[in-house]
Amino acid sequence: MEIADQLKSILGQKLEEHKSLREFTSIKVGGVADYFFEAETIDELVKAIQAAVNVDIDYLVLGGGSNVIVSDFGYPGLVILNRTSNIGFLQDKTQVMADSGVYMAHVINKAAAMAFGGLEFLIGVPGTVGGAVYNNASCWGGVISEYIRGVTMLLPGEEKGERCRVVNIEPQELKFGYHTTLMKETGLKNPGRKPVILSVKFQLTSLRREEIMRRIKNFQEMRMEKQPIGEFSAGSIFKNPSGSALTGGQEEKNFSAGFLIDQSGGKKFRVGQASVSKKHGNFVINNGKATAEEIRELIDKLKAQVLEKNGISLEEEVEFIGQWERSESEVDS
Ligand SMILES: Cc1cc2nc3c(=O)[nH]c(=O)nc-3n(C[C@H](O)[C@H](O)[C@H](O)COP(=O)(O)OP(=O)(O)OC[C@H]3O[C@@H](n4cnc5c(N)ncnc54)[C@H](O)[C@@H]3O)c2cc1C
Image (tube, rainbow, N blue to C red; front, side, top):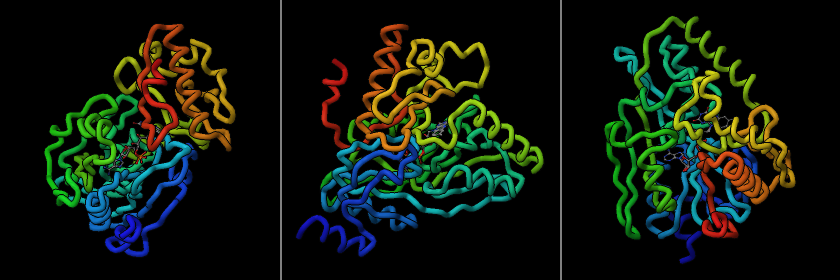
C-alpha cells in the first residue's frame, strides 16, 4: 500500500497531501509538507505520531510556527499541526493544566480572568505551550521553566511500528537552558523522531486582576516599542551571546544579538524580499514575497558580518525545517 493510503487508513480523510506550510508560520515562507494532519485532541496528536512511526516516515509537530523557517523544498514527511485546546485550573493550588496546542496568550488571558498571574512577561510570544516549553521561552528577564510543575510527553517508538509511550516527567528532567531544553538538543540530531509535549502544568500566583492586567499592558507596550509587531518574522533570529533573556536594561545591550547586528552595519542588509527590521536588528522580515532561501541567505550574511566585525559567532535561535539545497558544511565553509 502507498504511504498516503496507509496513513489515511489510520488517520482518515483529515489527512492532507502536498499542503503548503507557509500560512502556518509567522514568517510566511516555505514549501509543502508531503503529508499534513491537524490534531484537535491529544488522542489525535498521539495517533498521528504513532501513524508516522508505523509507516516509518519523519514527523514534525508544528505549534504557532513562530520559531521556524521552513525550506522552499518543504517537509518530506508528516507535519502535525497541534491545535489541541484543553485548559483547566486547579483552583486550590493556583495551577493551570494546558494542552500543548494552546496558545500562550490564551493561557495568560484565561489565568488573568481567574486572578492567577505570573506568565504575563510572555504576552506577545505568538506560540503554543508546547513550542514555548520546548524552547524554554523567555523575555524581559522572565523564563517559562520557573513556572512549570509537570510535563506529559510522548516518547516515539524508535523502530518502525514500535509503540509510542506516554510519560509524566518532572520539569528538571527537561534540562532547561537559555532558549533550549534537552529535547531540543537531542531533537536536532534526530529531527524526525523528536519527543512531543502533550500537556503542561504551570504554577501561578494569586494576584489582583487589575495588577495582572497592568502587567500585561506594560509588557505589550514594551514589545510594541522595541519589536516590529505586525510584520512577517520569526522573532529573534539569534540567541543573545550574553546567554540570557534581556531584561531591557542598558548595561546588557552590548551583549545582545540585535545590538551587534546594528553595530556591524547589518541592518542595511537585504536579500531579495528579505530585510532586517529597522526597529530591531535581530528580526529578519519577509516583506511579502521573500523565499526561505532569501531569508536564510540574509541570516548567513548577518552571521558572517558580526563574526568579521566583532569576532562573535552568533548562534541561531530559530530552527530551519525540511530539506535545504546546500549542506551545513557548505554553509560553514
Ligand atoms: C513577533 C515574535 C516575537 C517573539 N518573541 C519571543 C520572546 O520574547 N521570547 C521567546 O522565547 N520567543 C519569542 N519568539 C519566538 C517564538 O514565538 C517562541 O519560540 C515560541 O515559543 C515558539 O512556539 P511555537 O508554538 O510557535 O513553536 P513552533 O515554531 O511551531 O515550533 C518550534 C519548535 O518547537 C517544536 N514544538 C512545537 N510544539 C511542540 C510540542 N508540543 N512538543 C514538542 N516540540 C514542539 C517544533 O517541532 C519546533 O521544533 C517570538 C516570535 C515572534 C514571531
